[in-house]
Amino acid sequence: MNDHPTPNHPPADPARSAPPRTTREQDRAPIPVAVRVFIYVIGVHVFAGFLYLLFYLGASK
Image (cartoon, rainbow, N blue to C red; front, side):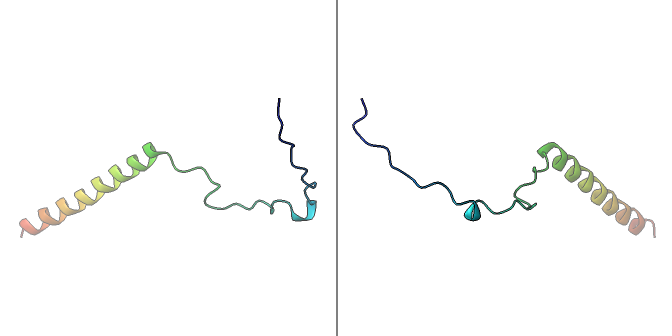
C-alpha cells in the first residue's frame, strides 16, 4: 500500500527536551470578556459621577 519508507528518527535526547515550564502571562487563562466589560462599565460610571459632581459643585457657586 505505502511505497514510501518511514524515516528513521533517532530517539529524543532527554537533556535537550522541552525547557521547564514557568508561569508566563501567555500560559495564564485570559480574563473573561464579561468580567472586563463589567469593570469598564463600573469605571465609566465612577468617572461620569465624578464629572457630574464637578459640574454640580461648579454651578452651586
